[in-house]
Length: 284
Image 1 (cartoon, rainbow, N blue to C red):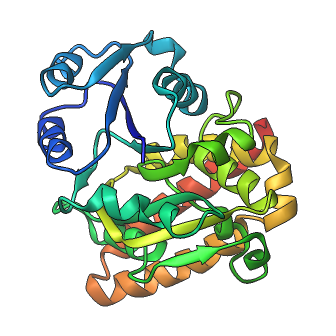
Image 2: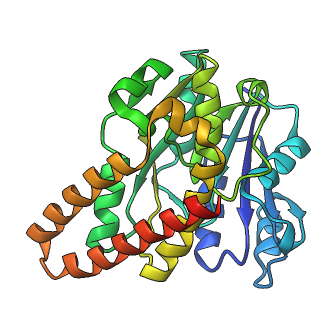
Image 3: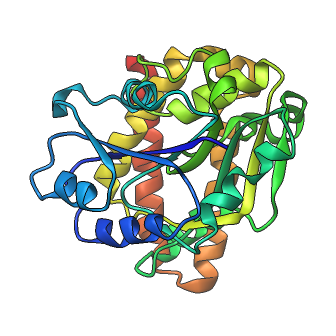
């Protein structure tokens, strides 16, 4: 299998060296590239020292979809492409091999994404989010599963995901006109085309965020814009609001058992998400 790896970077920080060491210990990929947005902390130089190819772009030109597509085209030809973000850590030496294993077993799978476990410093809220989105059981989803999972049928994360390149190209690659959620966009396109999405629970990384309310607000403005512009996703898979309400009530119940005081901050951040999402939908 001709497999490549792409990591978008911007001032990746001290943890990035550990990720590069982990990648070096993996059995694949054969081609490795970081696409760097003019880092000033030595990120590009460090990657070169570990044998990765470095592609530098102007920071102002970064786009979640277009940048990944641009980097992919630099590595072609490939059978499979793996995407990571700079802030993940691989759990074991077979994390990447387990992520792509499904492609050799089921040719109908276009996208595989793995389980994200919380970092050691994760808050209770961040831990719950990871448990909610990344359960311990693997899952194979097709378009018909929208009747069960709704919008989450098309859920995926490019923080730790792999694509059959032919399948990715068959849906036009990554979009250049979305502010965020390029992974959901491609997943939805694949499902509509009859391809399947695989969640590989045994392929694992550490990845979580302790977002502030302001960070959540800005993030959900972008998510709202995405859902407004790509209304075809909601039309085919359902709206985000229903799943969001279910998540909030489940999270508050779980936090109340762990530490009731955590509920106050969680409610504030959830309000920021709600109003950010609504504002994004209005702005389109």
